[in-house]
Image (cartoon, rainbow, N blue to C red; front, side, top):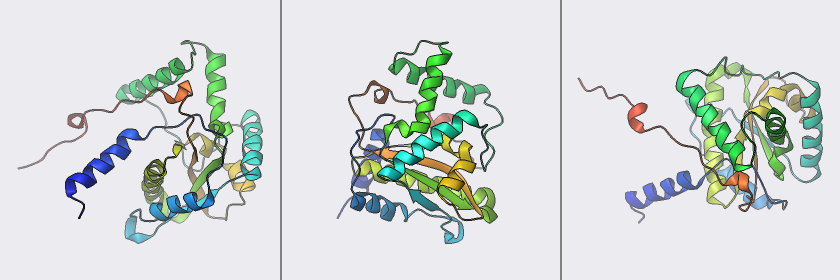
Length: 228
């Protein structure tokens, strides 16, 4: 029987090993492996067991047409997400965002203040960082923010499932800013809202962009104990 300690160690290993992969090998992931990710992800808990997530996954020529059209759309259109993006980043949130951006740019040799180079790096989001697949996650609009929260749980399960199978992945809110394109290209049903997307595939472990890791706040900074 697997002990509680072993289970905790396994989860810790997955969490410690996972990172936002921004460079991929070109080979496609076998359909059976993707289906296993979906099977594991389907165990995600949700409010009243509504399971509001729906997933559209691209492969092969579908991925190539998707990324080519998406990049062209982004260059010609303003962002229009189904869920409002954050109004602003202040305090610790701004500091963490800046720290991550600087670590990313440093990993690929982009000097601070080089707007042109950082802009090119940002556009790699819409090339899916070269990934052979992308999964677009949607929720039912009637479930509002709680449907989106449940989808967030699904995204995390998907990421850990991919990690457990030797894949790299990156959750991308950036793609949700092109919601009109996603709705049209993927023929999303009426009443679905785009939450985010996940680009995934086999990680290019030799690429410099995959060398940096983000930091995490100490638990004492986020947890408050109430005992009386």
